Amino acid sequence: MAKVSTNITIDAEVKKQAQELFADLGMDLSTAINIYLKKALAEQGIPFEVSREVPNKVTAKAIADSENDDDVYGPFDSVEALMEALNA
Picture: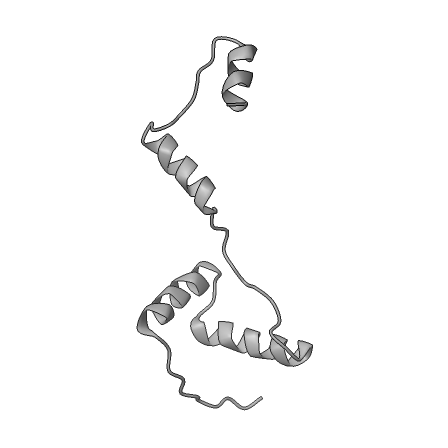
């Protein structure tokens, strides 16, 4: 299949973040765009989501809190104390 060059305008920060994301997924930006376009054509619409695993805000806060020893519970002296903290 013949290759052609196409110019598109992308926000500089979006491009940088996309390049980092796709590098984490083992591909460059051109490969990712080609995958997207082929899948869009096959499905005749916006096809799918490709993403790396990112914790949601609640999980990210819990991770940060535990790393900083902030808002961390335990150890507990009894199962009852644990259950009380969990139900609080």
